[in-house]
Image 1 (cartoon, helix red, strand yellow):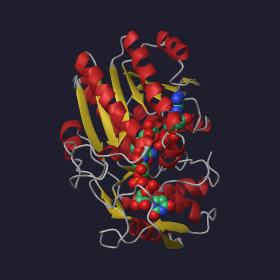
Image 2 (spheres, rainbow, N blue to C red):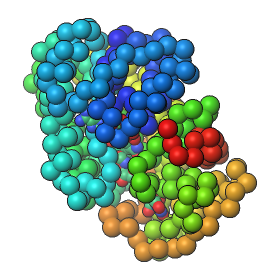
Image 3 (cartoon, protein in one colour):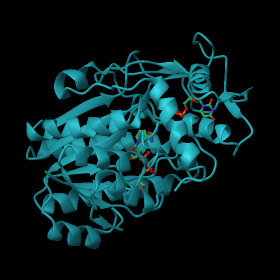
Length: 336
Ligand code: NAD
Ligand code: WQD
């Protein structure tokens, strides 16, 4: 298949390019580089032994998208491009709605005008809000999102489901990611956050490399065994392979399909910190801080549907996630 990958220079996109290449799929990338660096694509070329055509284009740029779709005939699009910082989305809601929703609407329109009606979309476990059932199946009702970022994911799911309902030539796969962490085992590509990391694992690796003095643990009074929040961390290489598997759903004309991509195993903040220390032999100083606004106690997936229907199952555990996250940070202390 020939696949348009939006946001392909980013964290999950770059890892997915490597797995798509290994599966023999052809890719073309668009990215406006607002949260990434073209070096990630150079490293992908180094890992795969092939150059991937790249266009520095924004998903809101209709002319730019038209030009690319005229130059290539795509079988499907994997749509990663979007803004993703929860806290920033509370400060800049308009920018999040305009980029994530505006960009996706333009992309869908240009796609259908060029007869490409197959898309895999990066959704998030955040759409479950404070989950009604644990472990979370795809049937779990969507919940209240406490921030504009989460709202964009939830709204885009609804928009795409409506588009598919009205025109059943569309095949739309909504992948709800749990907590992607780690990096390619080579240490050549990985997560490259700007400024202070919002997420736990990149914060831990920055403490490990000496860029930050200590980790703040956001709350130890949750109703969990050690009081800290529990999440379903998933190795980014497993997550990337989930996209390769999701292409099968497109091939069998799934209509609209929703899949959780998680391991099914929850770990607390302190369990992750302990695992990181043990695997890498590095002490991570931490102190307990107040709860972070909008956080929930426990969130982990039931990944059975993805295994049954896509034949996909996460292979890596917490040890490999900690090992590979550190391997990347250690080799690239300042990112790309
Ligand atoms: P990322 O920021 O590393 O990658 C997103 C890429 O999209 C970046 O390269 C950025 O430059 C690009 N981009 C943003 N807006 C664009 C636009 N309008 N036009 C073109 N390119 C644009 O983030 P990531 O972690 O790789 O996430 C990929 C997708 O997965 C995002 O949609 C994100 O919301 C979603 N997601 C991420 C997580 C996570 O924890 N990382 C969890 C659930 C869902
Ligand atoms: C994990 C745990 C924190 C940082 C977010 C988004 C979600 C999805 C994935 C995109 C929590 C604790 C964190 C720190 C800490 N992204 N923590 N100290 O909040 O589960 O999910 O990323 O879709 O939408 O909300 O991930 O990595 O921020 O936090 O104690 O410095 O680590 O409280 O319990 P989260 P996270």
